[in-house]
Length: 461
Image (cartoon, rainbow, N blue to C red; front, top):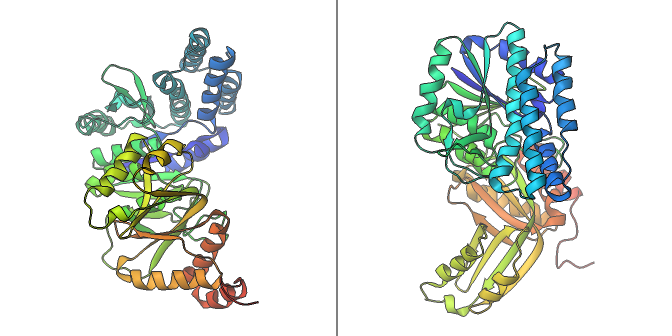
């Protein structure tokens, strides 16, 4: 058994669904379970429709309805009663939102669930028309039970037993389950969403719980790349990475898989294969528990922009216990999540997402320390071999020196597979390009980096 997950761009329209069907047909002997996202930008359109109903009292599902009915027509499927019924249900929900002028997290989860629910029903109907014994399922029908944390729900531990109990008999009976990603139900029967990376999490949860051979995550890129191709045109697919490396890549800027999506497979050692539905010949990236041998020093280089750096300085830190606890409890009071941390005898530097309002935090911290908040920063992260960290650091700092970019903070993660440092936002792309050149194109790196170097800080004209 395998699990195949296809994202929104992979099932965006009739042409893409035909292509997905052709991929699935090649895998039928491996007894697949399909997990699908909403078609294209449907989730965004649902959220827009909800906001329009809430703010302006306008109820319209025309765009969503037209797109899905056009897909049905182009696939030459008969009229789908369940699709029309679901669109009416959506229209009734939006009418309710417009009347009571309320859009709670619970209602929002209910609203966005329509994307996946429409997607799997159309896909299953098309697969059936192609001679595949496919059947659509809402995830909760197959054991996906969550808590009631709407917008970012967590599956309860009982799901580990419920999912295989529901799915394995279907596989044995020769059914191809086509399952909604991203959604579940809580104990009270309310629809919930699993938050960022939710559809990938649905797929990896099925794979891990059912002890599948592998989970295939089909995207619109050739796997996990050595850098963002928008920054580095010559970025290359990474053949194999560990769970820890993939999680660090995702957290620090890679957009292929969300870290929480890998958690189920990390528990069971299930392989995850990232493939490109637009380029099926590409081998993709295989995510595995660990390597026996490591050859290259660096797997990938990522960056995350629009970061805020907070420098906290106080002589009270000298020999004092409880100071760091007081600092972090202050962050906790304001529900602010910390990304990177570096400390010395009298200071602590912390990076945060720029979205936070830090006025109250700064006022509270100012009672115990001097606080300096710097915006417009970026985190550059090198994912690599911990055994070669000295080499990685030496080469990275040398590269930054050559192009005249000062490193403002450095941190090595507890997982020991990442080294991250702070530069100005405006310098991030140049740093990533130069590092990629050094670590992945070493024959020409010295010549090219020196050629593009700026005057180093402190040098004379």
